[in-house]
Each structure stands twice: as structure tokens, then as C-alpha cells.
Length: 118
Image (tube, rainbow, N blue to C red):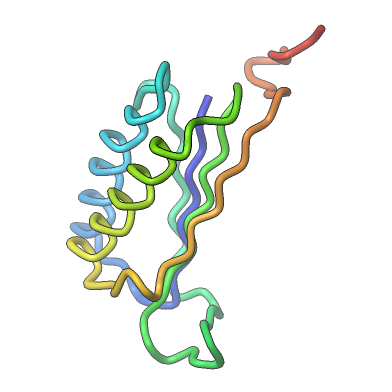
């Protein structure tokens, strides 16, 4: 049950969005047990986002939320490298203008029920 949100201060064309969605669908598989089948993606373009006092230079923040447990440092390293590479390839974003937040939760609701009850 993963979710990825990308907010950027840039415009995102339909073709770029398609490429991002496809790429993120592959990247999520870097997390053991996760697949594109359950991945929800939100892409927010033209956000009022700035980094280091600069709101004009393209930048983005990705939030990746997942049900389950913390992953290894190697997994997070691979995710960060892949997400930054995808954003650079699809949107021309410099990796030093990208933040990525990882959040793991033990509770996740879907289809009128919750996972993670003890």
C-alpha cells in the first residue's frame, strides 16, 4: 500500500507525467513486497515551492509513504538515487534541488477496512 506524492514548482506536461508515473511504478519495486499494483501517485505541479530562498529554480519534494516496516539504508539509498534520476530525466530537475521524505506506517486504511490492527 505505497503512496508517492511529488510537488514541484515547475509545470509538468502530460508526457512528463506519464513518464513519471511509469518510472515510479518500477521504482516502488525496490521496496521488498511492494508493487505498482497498489501504488497511488499524486503529482502536484506549479506548487509554491522554494529551496534555499530560491522559488524560481525548478525544485521538487517527493513523499513516499508505505505500510509495513522500516527498510535498510541500502534500500533507501537505492530509492533516492532512482527517484532523483527519474526526476532529472523526466523534468530536468537537478538532484540537488530534490528532497525525498520516507514515511512508514503500521496502520493503513483501504476498502472500508484497516491493515495493521493488533
